Length: 227
Figure 1 (cartoon, rainbow, N blue to C red):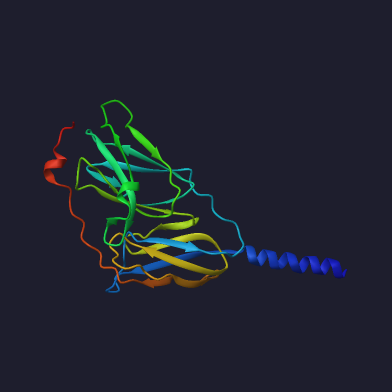
Figure 2 (tube, rainbow, N blue to C red; figure 1 turned 30 degrees about the horizontal axis):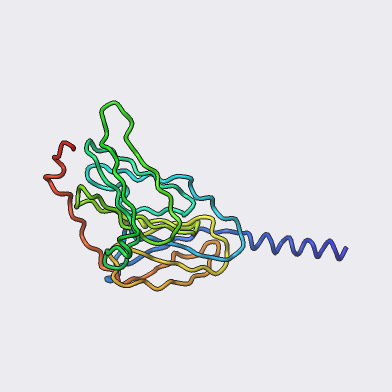
């Protein structure tokens, strides 16, 4: 009987450890306003099931822009770049530091993707990654094109919406650490600690980030017929 109670007790403890919650995060800029397109990463060593990252993420080049302009991918996820414009584009990428400067320009990567032809599927190329951190994306042919891709080993990661919010589901109960990154940050935002629990209140994370206004693609480039 004692053995049965002992086993039951351990079973209840294991069940409690496996409980998961939804974590809502609100990211604020330096003036206390919601910060869209901020990368949020949650790290925890609490026991529990980890979500399976998607096998592939698609980033399109369309109307002289990277779509989405800010994306997050797990290291195990392949990233497919697809050109939907009628003219050729490059994909130039590499790790980027504060202020939007490539950390090691000579160690980046670059490839060209043909423009889309009528009646045919768009040309694309797949890129795999082995290093975590933010990457800046560009095009050698069109200097106005800018995008960002953040690579992470955390299964709980994403980008805040227009209201500066993001919801991360299936997070095990226990201590966790939130990491914030934004393309316009000039100094690194310190990690924020939180305690994950079912029914927890949204976590507010303040930053010193001042977001810059997006610049439209050059009008003359939008009219280019191709190469």
